[in-house]
Amino acid sequence: MENNPYKTPKSNVTIDEIYKRPIWWKIYFFFITMISAIGMISFLFEPQAGISEYINLILWLTATAGLFGFTFIKPIYKPIFWLQFSTAYLIYSFAYFFITDIDLRMGMSDIEFYTTSAVGLLLSIPTYYGLFAFSRSTDPAWKKA
Image (tube, helix red, strand yellow):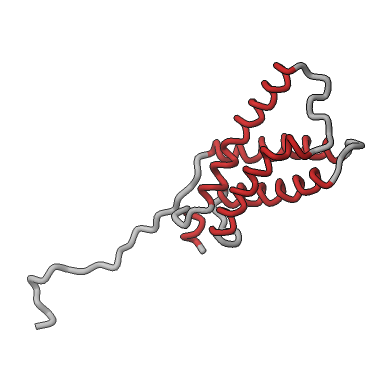
C-alpha cells in the first residue's frame, strides 16, 4: 500500500532564512571604527602614553573584530570568548580613566570633561551591546558556522 493515491503528499521544500543586520549597524561600525582609530592614534603619540594605552589598543582591535563579526554576521572564534571579552572590555573601558597617565581633561572644565565623557559613553553603548549579542549562541553568525 505504498502507492496510496489518498495519502497526503510530502515535500522536501525548506526555506533558508538569511538574516541581515540593518544598514545602520554597518554605518555605525565604520563610523565608530574611524573615530576610535583617530583617538587611538592620538593617544599613542602622546608623550605620557604607557602600558595602559597599549593594552587599550589590543582590546580595541579585538573589540573591532568582534563588532565586525556581529555587524556582518561572520563567526569569529567562539561565543564564550566574546562573552568573557565583552565583560573584560567594559570593565577596562571604565578603569582606563583611573589607570592612564595621559591627561584626559586636556584643559577642559569639569562640565566639558564630563559632557565629552558621557557622549563618548553613549556612542560606545551599541559596541558593548553588539559584543554581548555576538557572544550569544543564538546570534545568526553562529548558525552559519
